[in-house]
Image (cartoon, rainbow, N blue to C red):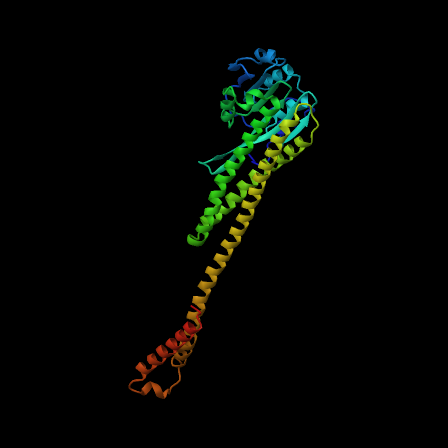
Length: 354
């Protein structure tokens, strides 16, 4: 399956808002976890059915409901109905090839991002779609599989005097998005270190494996760019929204998030440029190596041209060659060849041709 474009065959011919899962099933069962908190209390528990969370919808506390697994369309549909989500929102949640974006539905904001990770076994960047629904007192997060980068956020929520415990859903949304973008930086740094090490390999160990690494990293940085650049546009758009769900004091934090994701995209562009430079260096080293080989071959050819000429003369079929009857002609012949070869080698050496 193509990495850059999801197979949309399941949704061909479907009406807008149709609930069809597009993607790869990454977990056996859907897992629902609820964290409800305010200044004075904290509840952190797993839920068997989404109906058990309905009373949190209108509570005065902040509720974060995380859903792992998107393959069960019926369950996702019931979640959407329970929280009055638009059919187009539900369609986008189930389409794991959705481009990062933000939509304002007045009562809630719908945000799509990509969570990325570096698979050390395959050496490839992999992503997972994260959908956030940010309401006045609740946040829904939809993930493709268990295991995420949000454990530091959960730890902060567990600390009673943390800023998160005193903040609203807008600040929780910022904390979640900030963690995702921070993870972008970590993955980029990990790949960047390997890219920077490539330059030494190009100069010291010049083989085809280096070219394969350059091409692989160009492919991975392109994949990163596809996941991260649209997220930057979404964050830019969020800062321009005039939504009552985002308080003015939280906008300052989102502006800091804007700086962070700009840093991430600029780092990707820098490493892509570096890979292009490394490819040029590789080609230059290859060309120089070939030139050195051709230079050696040319020097040998230049030395043997006069030697071959002399040997050719004395290899002709003339009946009379007076030098051949001389007693020491054989030794003189070899002496002349050695002198000519030595003179040419000395000349080439003086010219620093080798």
